[in-house]
Image (cartoon, rainbow, N blue to C red):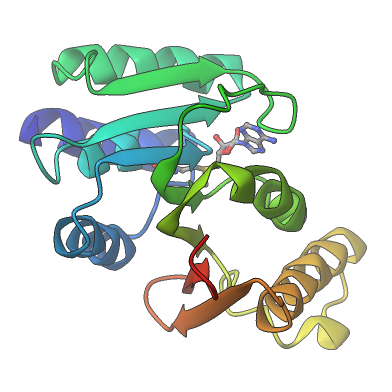
Amino acid sequence: MKQTILEMEEYASEKNVPIIEKKSIAFIMKYIKEHNVKNILEIGSAIGYSAILMAGASEDVFVTTIERDEERYMECLKNVKKCGMDKKINVVFQDALDVNLSEDVKYDLIFIDAAKGQYTKFFEKYKYFLKSDGAIISDNLKFHGYVGDSDNIESKNLKGLVKKIESYIDYLKENPEFETKFYDIGDGLSVSTWKNEK
Ligand code: SAM
């Protein structure tokens, strides 16, 4: 598995595929172990790097991961197989906003790491699949240092995207149902838990 992880890091860097920073995945793996996380939903698989590392955090962790880009989905499947994790990782090829998950399955951890402009939509859709003592972790809340400085960004597209992340942060801070802690780790992480256990 170690070799495949290294190859994935190389592939991501060569092909410009964004994958999680090492400090951030280390934080999540620690969280998985400390909170006895077993069932994980990931929005945004890319080539399977974080899914494979999360699934490897402990023997009985199971990951469902969603990816809408076909090439990345195929690469993800290939990597999951290479690591012998077919039974621990279920890769879904679809837009996460269109997926209909079974309502009977609830997750200990939902990891949001897909289109940054859609984080609020992902959160609103998937909070219903979170266990009463589960957590939603969101990545890239600093967005390479741009967040908090959107008024000074010239590129219209980048400015719009960063504004959306800023409004997601406000949404989390003001959320009546969830309490969110923000961590200055990697590209910025948050951990949201239910205020009142359901
Ligand atoms: N979690 C991965 C890792 O650390 O190895 C990296 C994921 S990458 C930052 C984001 C991925 O989310 C991209 O591959 C992109 O195609 C996918 N994505 C973006 N929006 C999506 C959506 N609405 N549904 C499914 N996948 C999406």
